[in-house]
Image (cartoon, rainbow, N blue to C red; front, side, top):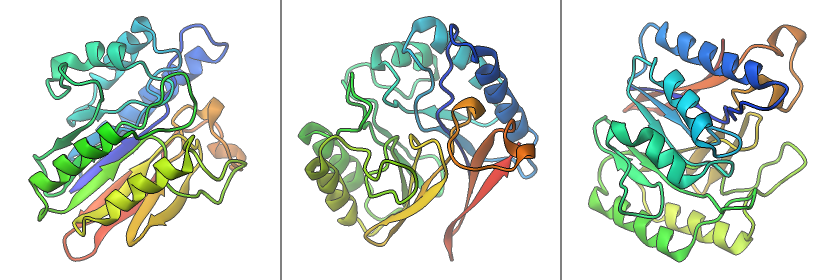
Length: 250
């Protein structure tokens, strides 16, 4: 199984670099479409747009609509749940009856468990008791099949960049980590938000953070020839060894 992860496209129509952000997004999707072997699925781990506006989501949905593989999206701190849900409702996997954008995809050798860490009006993440309960219910429905968990905000200490923690409340972050550690079938955790690549662990769970697709917002040191080229992650799963992650330079 191959998962293409993209994140932090931050589509905006009024910023000075609006055209660059759109181009970066389009180039990433074109590159994913050209992969051989092709990925089984594409996951966007949030901050799809920058201001949460319907017109931004319309543009983002049109770009993702060009993808050949099935696409699943999540909410980041810049996203608006209602407008995101409206834009991607035709795909059929977002439940209009619940507040949070969290769900499990069961169609692949590994379950894809999408969590909602959005705290409206705040850059850092949150995970309330209601979300913990929903997460536990999702995991207990199928506790034997391998699962990969996706979050926008990484729920662990990040040792690169100026910010070590990306949750507003460290007790909340620890509660989410403790819940993850309960399930031996969680074999990977994939996140975004930090705008640079990083690795970590939650207990025995290997964790990966991917850079942002928007090159004008990407953090970290890159050679000159990479600075204008989007980077995304390919996660390749083999039952005998779990996931191996490749940083793909467009």
